[in-house]
Length: 406
Image 1 (cartoon, rainbow, N blue to C red):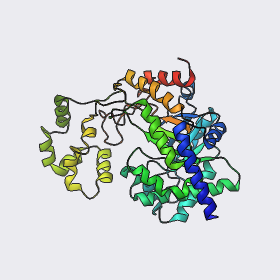
Image 2 (cartoon, helix red, strand yellow):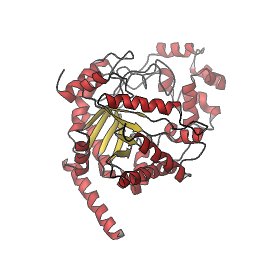
Image 3 (cartoon, rainbow, N blue to C red):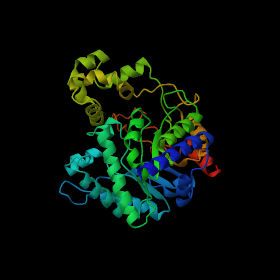
Image 4 (cartoon, rainbow, N blue to C red):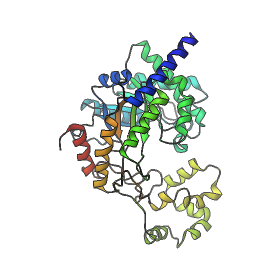
C-alpha cells in the first residue's frame, strides 16, 4: 500500500508540475468551481450591503469565527452574533468562507494548548463543522500561520499540527455523512510558507483547496503576471486547487516628508526619534494598545529594545509611511487602486488551478489594527469602499472586471 501511495504521489506531483507550466485543467479545481456555482469571488471583512456586493459579482464573504465558548465553558455571545451574521448573508443569497479561531484564543479563553491537547482541538473543530455547515460555504483553518502575531504562542511546527488535526477531524466528519463541505488552510506570502506547506504534506489529502494571501506589487516593483507566477509556484508545492484568500492594494500611501514625520513625533510629545528612544517604556506607554500588542507578539522578551524597534522594524507603521514601489508603477491613489484590480484579477482568472479569489477588503477602517493609528494606511486604506460605505473607483473596477458591466 505504501508503494502504491508513493507512486500516486509522484504521478500527482508530475501532473501538477506540467499542469502549472502549460496551464492545464485541474479536475479538483473544476469540481470545486462546479460545486460552488462558479469561481469563488468575494471580499474580506464585509459590510451588510448585500445587494451592492452582489451587484459587483462578489457572492462570497470571508471573516473570522470567534472562539465558540466563554471562560465558563458556555457558548459565547460573540459566537452567537457570528452565527446570526452568517445567516444574514445566506438569507441574502451569499456564501461565507469562515476562518476558524486563532491559537491564542484556545490558550487565553479555552485554557489549553491546542497543539498538544489534540483531542480537545479536534472536538472543537467538529463542533464548529456540525454547528456551521448549513450557514457557511466552507472553512479556512485559522489564518496565516507563520506570522508571529497570528501564530502566538505556537512554533511553526506546532501551528502545522494545530491546522492538520482540525483538517483531519473535519474530513472524518464529512466522510461520515458524504458531505462536500469545503475545507482548507492558507498562508501569508512570506518565507515561512514553504516550510508550513512541507509540514502540512501529511494533511494535504484532507484539503479541498490551499489558500494564499498575495500582496506583491504593494511596496515592491512587480507585474500583474507575477501574481500568476506565484500562484503556479504554490500549486506545484501542494497540488491542490488554489484560492487567493486575500489580495489588494492601498488607495493611499507612499513616503512621508520630514515635516510630516516631525508632526507625528510631536503628537506623542517628542522633538526627535532619539528623544523618544531615550524615554524608553514611557514612550511605549503612549502608543495605542494595538501597537503595544504588536511589539509583544513580534518581539517578546525584548521590552528594553521596543522603543528602538519602533523606529527600525516598525517605523513604517509609526509614521504611516509605505514604499513608493508599486505594481507596474500604479500609484497609491483611488484611481491607482482601481487600475490594480483591472490588471491583477484577469491575470489570476486565466489560471486553471485557481478556484477562487477574495479581495482585501470591503471598506476602509478607522484605525490600523497593527498600530492603532488612523494615519497609517497599512490596515486602513485597503477598502474598495470608503469608511462610510460609499464605493470607491476600485469597486466599479471590480464590478466591470467580474460582471462585464459598469
